[in-house]
Image (cartoon, rainbow over the protein chains, first blue to last red):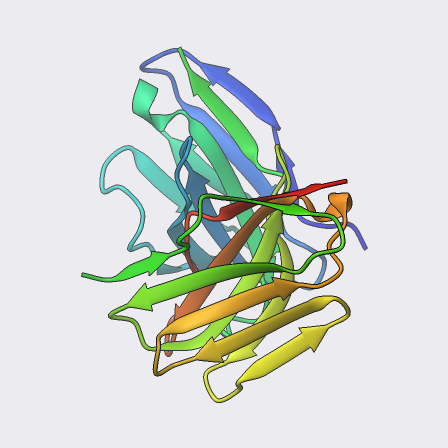
Length: 115
Length: 112
């Protein structure tokens, strides 16, 4: 059973470009979470999605950031018009259900560098 | 304001000793508290989960305690090994929410 997959592992963008980060959850998992880890900072929750629904986006910046988890295919975190402050590691996690008693399984992360 | 703090950024111990890491929280009423391990360049890996009505949980050389009165969790690694060197993260969830709130982590180094 493959773990959570994220691609690309490293992404370099120039200011003003768009970044698309992909996450394929573990097989059988329908709940996806995105977290951001800035240098020397802890992991910060961004958004929680189920298939075709955003359940909690309380940690997502209101502008330039969006997320989706379509019926078919991976979850996508999209950052438009990137700025240097968006440089960070972005982690996706999945769980089999949306219960807070479940552990979350994390992917290896996408390291975004904005030049 | 709400805080979750791991009071040591770094901890160095000798191989064979017990490592004890602390996680304190303020203005949360967590239903669950979890501990994860993170190695450089990798995603966190789940270690242990403890419920608010549990005092202690064990798994092999790992032990977690949860004191809702002190608002504190302790994470112990007994008979530590150099391979235990990593950053350890505590995370909590509140009732009704599935998102994890993480501390900044404690970087543990076990010296041979």
